[in-house]
Length: 347
Image 1 (cartoon, one colour):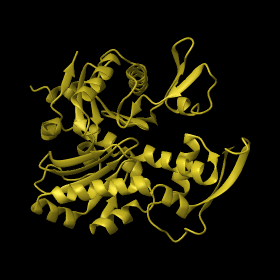
Image 2: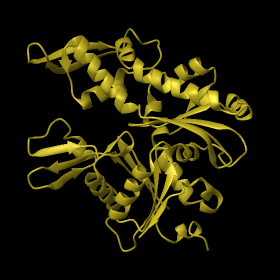
Image 3: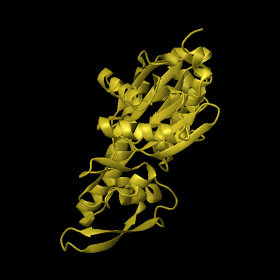
């Protein structure tokens, strides 16, 4: 019996360890957890006081003795200790506090990270309580979660836009033919909105407010409601130092995000230029699939279609594609074991 076929003997866990959000899939149960990748720490006592949703509520609202932070940046671990604590918390929560048998864990990772960064992810998972750790490139997991026929000899193109990285990959026969990874994604879009409002309106806003603006009136392509879509935003005025309210319009928010969006489009074009002709023909026939939280940006699929000339579709559940893919991999190891990253770690 091979190592992959033994996964079914225990309750295995698939994790989409994202910069913005972490999702956990438990074999036999499905996705049981979806929470922000945030940890709140008491600086004086050096202890964790909140993880996930509760910690995110504290971003920008903490006293001096408390720090709310994101353990991951650009898709990789930036704070090892916090990442370990966060993983342990999510694993215990997914297991409902039961830890008689240490789980085998499959983690989705950006395809462009280094070997050292991969090791950091695996070490954090082992320290968090995993018996065995396996890695899968996020584009492959997202494609499987989106229902693409990755086992067939046909070209499939997927764009996975997360919080820290954008992954563009062409897949065929259970493998990655080519891929491009750029550390520009949802966080950069949010930051570009903050910087625009600061520069144009002299207003300082928090990360949560900028994210809300992106979700409510952010768009990548002109829409019919451009003139009507407005949002009232409160922040701290730079000149007076007092709270102030401004009215933002949809077109100006789209313009504020143009630079990172253009970088994503260029990455897509760069990947298409390198795609073998036969696979390119398949992609033209089948279209491009958008996954990840960034896929929810209004008009992004239309913009990519316009720029590439290839129909682009948003996956049915873009936010959970990677987590869903890890789950399907856990339940179909014999058919899909070739897609795993070469690295694995056992305790």
